[in-house]
Image (cartoon, rainbow over all chains, first blue to last red; front, side, top):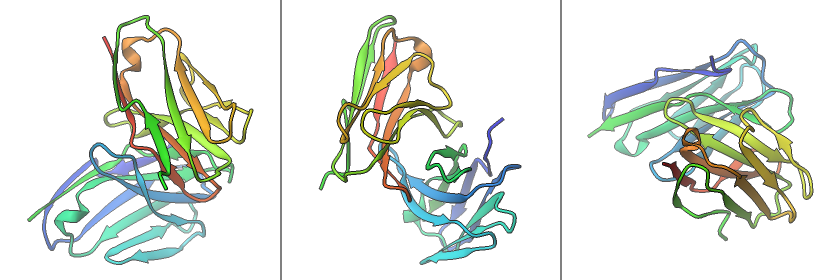
Length: 111
Length: 110
């Protein structure tokens, strides 16, 4: 059992549709980060959320940190093929800069 | 500005062989990490370092050793490779907010 559970594991949608990826835990995190990873490359940081209830937007991507700092969501509006990739959430429990990763959500946006 | 560089990119080993994975960062980051990535399991922390000359165990340290003799380099060693160590290995560095990852080393143990 992973400390951070991501759902769904795989998501296939058509261009223009919306999607939401969830990251859940029973543990409290001091901060939570979202990364996107493309084949053959390392993960790339998208956003860091640190305050319970915080919402951050990055163009068509909206990130939310749960009020209790145990969960987070990533919402993509009007998805494009360029959004295809593996999305990973990662949490830092004690501000010790040691991240624990979820299992990832593979997103495929078809043109 | 290379960021985090990992060498080699690919390697095939026989069971029982040893090897060292190299990681170099040019961002003057204090923190460095080694993760392994396996299908459906995300990234799992092997070892990490909070500064030159220091190392610590992560979630899955068995079968691996590390060294951080210079601030910019973090080495991961496999003393006697086993098939269970077949994986993609990622190095990362951080200054405290957000990790910078290399592009990985794909390692196969036969």
